[in-house]
Image (cartoon, rainbow, N blue to C red; front, side, top):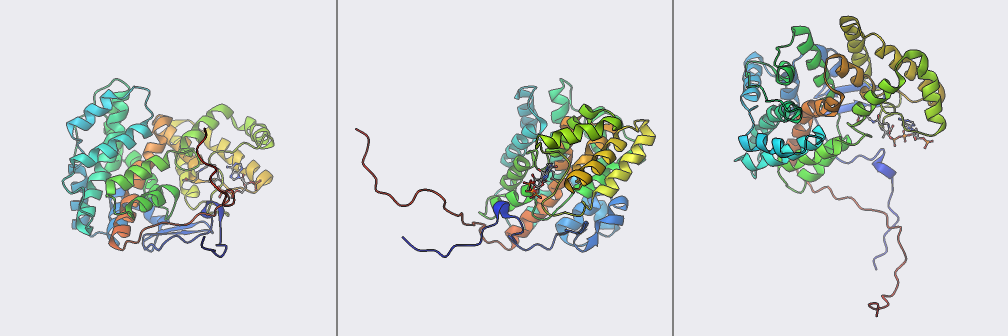
Length: 376
Ligand code: ACO
């Protein structure tokens, strides 16, 4: 047996640098930048397509490039008929994240570039994935509700189209603008769990669909993207601001995990929270549902007092999606509709300069012992 020196071990890979990236930097002191641009200021002004272009290509597009890229994504939104048919075959109770994961995996079979991991082919496949993930979510939702999907409207942006494909109405400009900002806030976050899963998969030289399927599967969990659906349940249970303090204090006494709080990297606040909170306040006024943001603010106050823990973006995403009219089961898929841009950019980066990601584990099992022979 080879004697190994005891390796450094960090449970959950906390603080471990697992690779290099030029795509995104998460500043533990509540900052976030994509390709060198501070997300604040850009998120509220750029369309999601502009940010997706930046993540994938490394530079902001000029007007012509942006128009072309926006049109290319829109032109790829339609799903192969067999994929739509597959969604009809799934039980109506299938969670939208499971439908999405199955859909992404199935889409791979219809892509002629599937096994080409070159840079250009990966960019082409990224454009298809960004367009089609959105359609898998919206059409999948309508099918699960016993309704027919709406025909494509390629003249709409990703944000406007997301609303249209759910209820057949073209949204007001302010609503699309808001969803663009939300998509921009969610678009990338360096080596978060789903992106890391995508990079591990890509590092075996598996294709981009395999990597994005891994990412969707990983995003579903409530400690990651699934938290924004769980936060919605929590806020509904609390119901009003005056109940928040007692509700939270009791949950903390029983050592429950509170969804929408805490973060592996941010310890002084999540860079995305102030913008999401502002959107929530604005929506409260526009929709007359002004009770939700004060509940979140009260929870923040109590959590700071009791545990010194900060809210993360998923706390405020829950009421924001609700007030925008989305059903809570679509909260995590909405996250995926945006994060696909980051996942794809990371797969492109991984394939362009690949090394297999294969860490070690610390063996804590029994000492070497003799095999006693098969039971008689
Ligand atoms: N509720 C209650 N206690 C918490 C929470 C929480 N949300 N988050 C952390 N803690 C506690 C931990 O139990 C730990 O307590 P202990 O020292 O008594 O054992 C302490 O705070 C420190 O925890 P960390 O080591 O900082 O947590 P870790 O980095 O392992 O986990 C995680 C981060 C998974 C995000 C965690 O905070 C959590 O479970 N949050 C709730 C789920 C959530 O909102 N996820 C969304 C993350 S953001 C995103 O994906 C967009």
